[in-house]
Amino acid sequence: MRIVILGAGYAGLRAALDLARFRREQQLDVTVQLVDQYPYHQLIQLLHLTATAGITDQKSIYQLDQLLQGRDIERVEGRVTAIQPLERVVRLADGRALTYDRLVLALGSETAFNAPGAREHAFPLHNFSHAIALRKHIVSQFTRAASITDPTELRITMTTAIVGGGYTGCELAGELADWADDLCRQTGAPRKEVRIALIEREGHLLPHLGPWASHEAVRRLERLGVNIFLNTPVTQVEPCLLRFGDGRILRAGTIVWGAGVRAPALLAEAGFPTDRIGRVLVDRYLRVSGQAVVFAIGDCAAVANGRGGFLPPTASYAVRQGAHLAQALADEARGVAPRPYEPVELGEVVSLGPNDAIGNALGVPVLGYPAVMLKRGIEEYYRATIESA
Ligand SMILES: Cc1cc2nc3c(=O)[nH]c(=O)nc-3n(C[C@H](O)[C@H](O)[C@H](O)COP(=O)(O)OP(=O)(O)OC[C@H]3O[C@@H](n4cnc5c(N)ncnc54)[C@H](O)[C@@H]3O)c2cc1C
Image 1 (cartoon, rainbow, N blue to C red):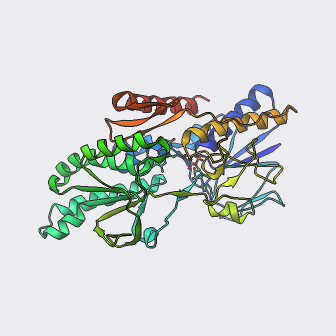
Image 2: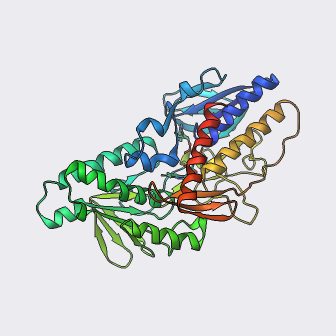
């Protein structure tokens, strides 16, 4: 059985590593191809740290060739441009075509630039190159600011506006507030001119964590010097300028767009049924609705949460769906009926700078130092599971 996995992120890599292990331990008659546009696996959860020099670049990526060494997984580097389920073919940008017996869609999500001008004038933070580009831009703004004498120009240059109060926005705002001290020392930019604005359309931050978390996140980020604008929809982005629904404007030398995600368009273009943000609808077995041999996991899959909605796009669900599907495909190869996927809510932790975090662990709120330690523990555990699988 030839299994092709599209995407070597949290979900796809886990599925590939587990399948290779099952193949070795149970002598399964399967081959595994893992396709990604990059030669590395990205720890997307750490991109805000790469963007603010909180970690060295090499800590947020793993070279796939090293990670997959000796693991009986064929790595294919290439950008998927089309999927033709009737022919069971995947097409890559360089003209190559891959055929499959089972196809796993694990292509993640992309930034949803859902306001005019956002794509052109704001920085996304959704992959490693975005993080590097954003960091370079911020350093150049601070460096330039050191020699600006005009107060208005200085104010604009030293303002960073982050749109979207989810993971990306809160984690980046907290980290940037901390980095600003070092950055001002290194570049000579005036510390008192640093302004970080976090702008959210709804009346709360971090919607997945509930109202208590929003209240705490606002309080803690404000303590770090972040200005929070709630109930503030952005209607237009122009060079160094945001326009809000109530007619106000904000001028900022750096604009970051973290207001929403959507699944890659090629999934709907392939004819798969999708939800309103392009995620592929799957059944209890993570099988794409109406498809016999195509499965979807992670951010690009709309997986029912059992309460009438869909699971949130988190790394934790992505990894566990990858593991579940690997087991199900191994079961199928052995002629055993696969079990349905039952989502378990383990919780989430969001960092608010290097020394603070907020979240819930199995439904119990965690804050401050224990949350920071929990987040570090989760990261170390993840690293151990992919390095030693
Ligand atoms: C800044 C930021 C902070 C976050 N923080 C947290 C957090 O603290 N906790 C948490 O649980 N979640 C967090 N998330 C969300 C989490 O990162 C995602 O839920 C997780 O990455 C989803 O895993 P995935 O495997 O579905 O997709 P990904 O990890 O995005 O992997 C998708 C893979 O598909 C590849 N790919 C995509 N399109 C193509 C194509 N056309 N051709 C070939 N390859 C392709 C990509 O290169 C990538 O390797 C954060 C996200 C961001 C952006």
